[in-house]
Length: 115
Length: 112
Image (tube, rainbow over all chains, first blue to last red; front, side, top):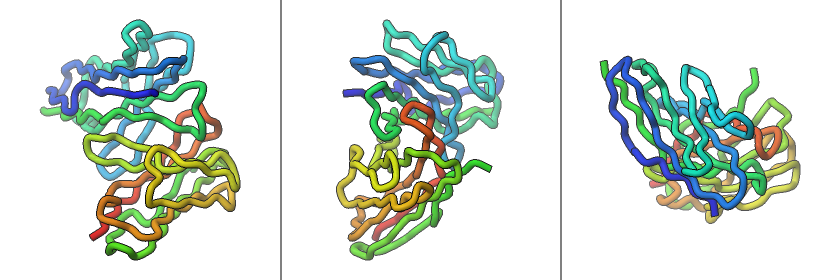
C-alpha cells in the first residue's frame, strides 16, 4: 500500500532564509508526486507535480522539488522565503493503478515564516 | 473561471440530523472526490466518482453517501451525523486519474 510521511509537522524559519520541507513515500510501482499548499481558510492549491522526466521540478512561487527514487523522497525547497509563504504544505502521491483520481496525502507541514 | 464550488462553507448541526454538502465543478471533469481533513492525519478520501452514476468508496466511507446524477455535481450526504464526523471537508475534481486535483474551498462541519 502507498503511504506518505512528512517528516516535520512544523517548520519555523526567518524571512529570506532557505527552507526544505521533507517528504518520503512508499510505493511498489511508479509514482506521481505532488506538493499542495493550503493558506488559512482556503482549499488546496497545487504547487508542483512530478509525473515523469526530469527529477527536478519547478513550481509556482519560487518552489522546487527533487524526486529521488533511490531514497523514495520528494523534498520541497525554496532558496528564500517570504512572510506570505506561511501556510500548511501537503505532499501527496498517486500511481498508475490510481482509481478515481485518488491521492494519498501526508500529514502536512506548517511553515511559519517570521520577520 | 475554472472552479469547484462547495456549500455551505460552515455548518453546525446536531447528532442524527441529516445533512447534504453540495459540490459543483464547471470544468467538465470526469473525476470527482470527497476528502476529509483532520489535524495530524492530512486528507483522506471518502468517496470518488469516475463518471455519472459511477461511484465507489475511498478510505473512510463509513457514515457517508454520495450520488452523481449529473457530471458537474457530486453531493456528500450524511444520513445520521455523529460527532466523529466533525471535520473539514473538501470536494475535488480532475480531468483524468493522474492530472492534479482541483479543490474547493472546504466545508467546516461541526456535529454536536
